[in-house]
Length: 180
Image 1: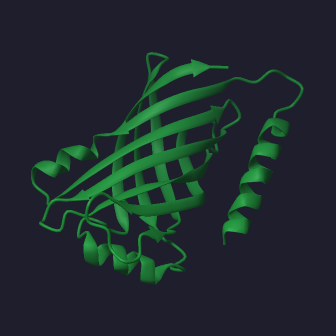
Image 2: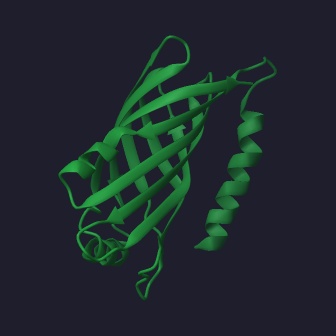
């Protein structure tokens, strides 16, 4: 599994610069924060999610999501997740699809279960709205493990953290930090 992920990452980083033609093309670096943290007021978990995006003008990009899910129901477990997602904007703006190329979830903190590392892929569908050149609002629905190839990992994590679900709605607020 690790060798496949490593090979995929090498191919992506080798092909991504070659994808752009001889014309100069702008790539935007965007930082996002999920407003879903607001549900911690009424739920028994706290879900923080950040994203670092590189998106080219032609509608192809990469995203590195960073999330931390903290159980507040008494168990005290915390799950850190990250990975690399391929972003595809079919019309260069608006709707997008995100596919995880590599993903890892690790239990962190003082309460560590027996199995600490898990691999769950995800797919997301969403829409990006940009205003005032620098700010974006991005709504998306994320579906964890769509191929159901890591079913045991999903149920293991869900048994420890009840807030870990297959579907997750994100409302990201972002800032286009710079363009190069």
